[in-house]
Length: 209
Image (cartoon, rainbow, N blue to C red):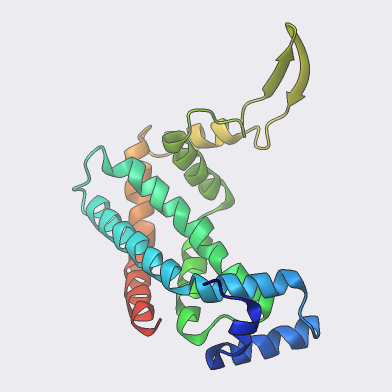
């Protein structure tokens, strides 16, 4: 049985968010906002459980690398999970912000995620992106030009969105004794306190949903 927006309107726990959304967007709510509220409501448990799994793994990786006990296979995972925190997990809150309010029990998580991201410079965030993509994608088109060839002729060239991505990465690695793992160790130490805090906050939030 599918859930509709009319079902959401009957849920007392959603009353505040519907009122906030109506105050911001008017009545009836635009279809896009109704869809956002449906997504928040129907995926709340799933996203909370996945958030806990992801944060637990990030906590364990950070602790292991920070204690200099990381093995080679830990470092690619560190970049993948760190990038997930800074992008997907943080962007989950955009849905609430579109409505007008992040639930009180989720606000500490949002603040800690924001603090983790803010602890990195723009170049460091792009480095994390590069390392993550390098471990999960065969082709990194965002920093290489991409050509389309037809009948042995180049008919289209797509320019890269981050031309200096590779130079930025090489510069940061060079600043860390030419060691990717050393960068990971320094980044793990930098975010260790906030990752520990995030794990505690996500664990507590999971009990509420």
